[in-house]
Image 1 (spheres, rainbow, N blue to C red):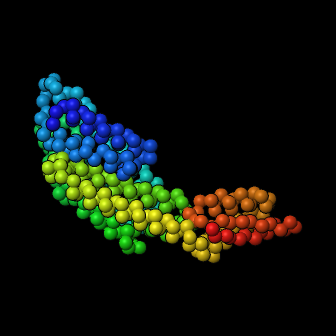
Image 2: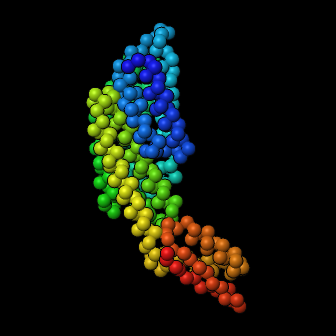
Image 3: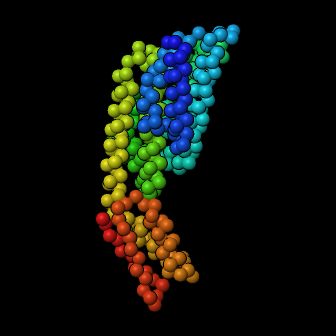
Length: 291
């Protein structure tokens, strides 16, 4: 691979990672178009000879170092998302079974991009190969997809079960984090195909299929939560409304309505809620209309 091609691949990889910085996690729609760049990166680092002398490699090596830097930043951002959701993480093994291994693989991939000298470069390639053989990205992606079929291993459904109000934020946070892990595995597999599989795309294509199946399932789950209105009224909404009324007797009807509306707006549902206040009393009657 000539240096101009290598620089183009490296630039595209760095750009795709930076594009994901806005949401702080790996995003399939931003990274999948750069499949060839990740494959090319893997091929380039495989054949790279690191010299201590100032030569034609120098400019490429500087660009290559940026790959590791950007991967570290994005992995740290992913870690912050997991920290925000740690209350749910302890309830299932998604984090330790899949997410941690995906993070290890992407970090090992990034380490291959920091070539200080030939000995360290070869050591980083060897370590990546060990991690890749131990934690197959395709196998992890298939396992993650299969976890979605079981109520007790599905991280999205478990998080929603733990969320009393089944909020949009919880659903979107967990579907995005699962998609991000699929994306991590996708780019690692693409990188590995440049090193070990003669740039053949079967493995990353299969991960892409697993991710597409997950996205389709997520749409079905979203519709289920949005239309399952019975649970909201009897088990969550009514007790919540009554609690607001009982604990805020000094507030006006408008103030109480605002408190109630603020919580109801967070719920993932198609239902529309109306509030009706009696003119001479502080009590209120709430009704629900399903669209």
